Image 1: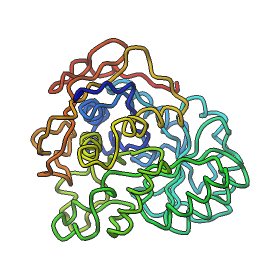
Image 2 (image 1 turned 180 degrees about the horizontal axis):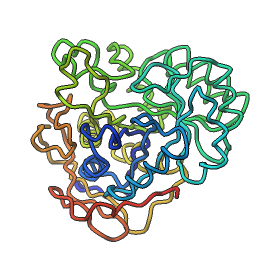
Image 3 (image 1 turned 45 degrees about the vertical axis):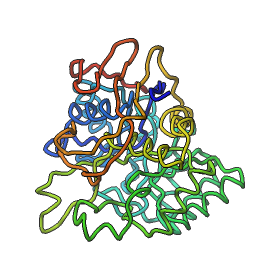
Length: 355
């Protein structure tokens, strides 16, 4: 069988842009990229300016996303150093979770004071996830808060062997955590920077071949729960400027890269379905709507080309790579929304999964 039916694919870690950064991507263009990548839904991070750290910023984002999105969606609220935990009781019903940036990233939401992180953990209502950007030994600092407060924490874009070891031990301890990894850390290393240049810059940065192998081992053993794109478009002008931006698009290439892994014998298709659909829905408390699925032809090989992408930024770090897994169709709530080439529905079709 080469055509697989995947129920309710969801990417719990994307940066759709829009708002003041609509030149990089809009909620319409980037949710179109999500559909083209096979996704039913995406969960959007809070660090696009203006950062989603108070009620007015959240309301603006809810309105603009609601008017534009063609896939279903959710929005993270951002933890800030400005004691914005006082808003949590008011906003909890409108968001998918809380994002805490504990290491440097795009935007201004870095929190490197453990006492401030503790305040956010204490204040956050425990019925929705905390997602964290944590690298290196910062992972251990966040695990101390998970151990203290027992609030489920999703560790985004894990990229090193050390981080995998810390989190494997935490899972064995029974801590309430889940682990996401990204395709660029599975298929690219720091050795590729000589060829990619600024197109290979992201946070966390590309790592060593040993780190890459540790991620594959963790995928194959079941330690990793989710493969997430960390879709983060920037224009080519920004990438090749004197101060290159960090981040790469990925919504349209994640499933084909995982189907390549199936072709290579690294993963089974059943494991892929868990990584992009079953596990993220379970972790983020979502049920697949009736008649919501993706049809993907895992036997069809194709070359990733920028001219075929829906993302507004119009490029990929994987350009020229031969992959497998052509998305033939996406259906949401019984309506075909993508036919393998074109988006078939109007802006605003997508629903807020947490509203």
